[in-house]
Length: 296
Image (tube, rainbow, N blue to C red; front, top):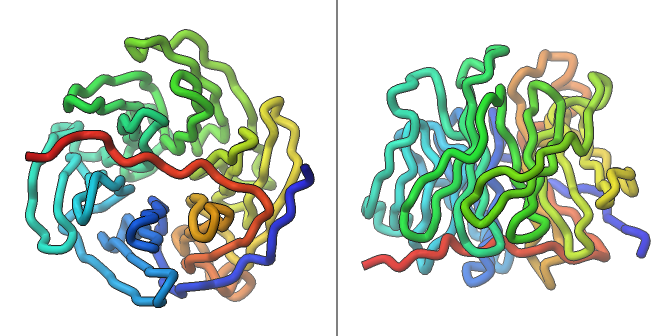
């Protein structure tokens, strides 16, 4: 089936410094996303267009839904379970808190509801201080991979195979793990060149195609399982950072962007940079699972 998409539509001009962490929560009819640098969570109810901004105390890379108003947040130096309605903190798990220059970046749940996330050097230096982690349903934390500059993704093909990227190295990896989360295979799936930017956030549709955001490339590219580019969506924003399927029939794509690293000429050319976009498609995405734990 040939992929068809609408033109990107700005649905919230948030002017994010570094928009990230898109999450569709079906029972809330809402898209959630973050601005890492402004330490904010944005919530847009697409049914009634009600908007909400939640301020947090640390840089926030992502959030994942648990149940009701309970979420797990990927913050600088910690994972925090919190009720976003009353701001009650339920649990905190320290993550590389002794590496002061690191922070959590992108993260998502896999097909079994385990939480995967990566860390990176917050100054974005060309040093491999980042790692890929998995937090299981019993709060057991495992470092799955390491030696990343800027971790991004992941996007899951199956229970044991997923994509993950290093944005600074402009590489997307295809990784397979065993039942104990030890890496069985890690291959370069795609390597970007300077002209098209760096691979950032990504997601997978029900046909197992990979949708990749281009930071600095003003587009999303879609690749089939063999790495062939089969579709491109161009944006009026330079830095496309994260995307997820959601909305009606899970066939809409919500996309964040960033103003970070842009000069005045770029901002004039890409006037909608920092906004949240929506795209309609003729394909369906795989809805992100809830983080599968029981809260007392």
